[in-house]
Length: 72
Image 1: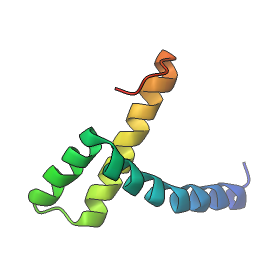
Image 2: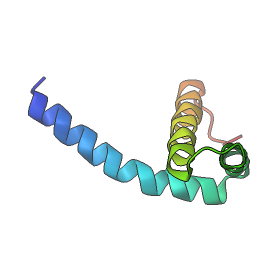
Image 3: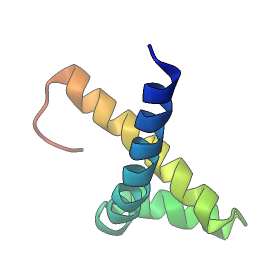
């Protein structure tokens, strides 16, 4: 694959990940609790948000794999 296309995709995905992650933290109780625990343990807020985005990707991957329509 063309390295420029990979770089462009990564840039676009990164630009979308932060607003999606911050919205998920506000509206999903499990992610909100996870975020608050990380911040309470002294992690920077940006790092805690990135950890939540990664956790959200894992949750979405599990939903797609199982074919479930409900979010746990």
